[in-house]
Length: 221
Image (cartoon, rainbow, N blue to C red; front, side):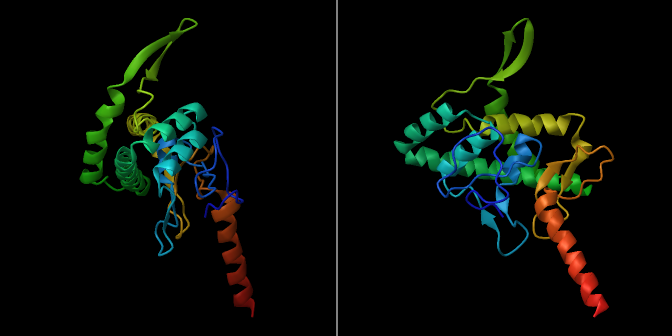
């Protein structure tokens, strides 16, 4: 579980902690998977949504690198004056997050992705893909997302592109779901032999090792 500045805390892009002091652990390997992982203990009664407020979404965006700190501060100023817009943007982000989880968890299990989840993703994709532009720098060309600085969905747009790229690229067969019964976090298996089982070996992996060790001790008694 992510705790304020706890042992699993790890921010890729920097950023400030969320309102509850949360530093999001970013072990998914892709932006869309990291958003899907903003639910702790998903398969258990202790399920905890880490995106309780729009401010949490902005904090996640800063820490993941989806937006910069300056963009985050601007969004918080704007949405502070437009609370209804902030609530609507958070609701859209959560819907997309759940669709991403449903799609990629099915992929990880070798099952067909739910049509409803694909539909949700497709409904939101034009928001992001319609903002793609070609940029040129030092003789090299690349895709860029041009989103208005005051757009409450600014955090979501790079996530949508990340999901589309992962689904249509050559790494889809590397998507995994954590083997822990209490976790269900998603990650991209970049190991050489593609045998990674845990979202984080230092947490879920060590817990599994401890349980196996305890079970062996009990069998000896």
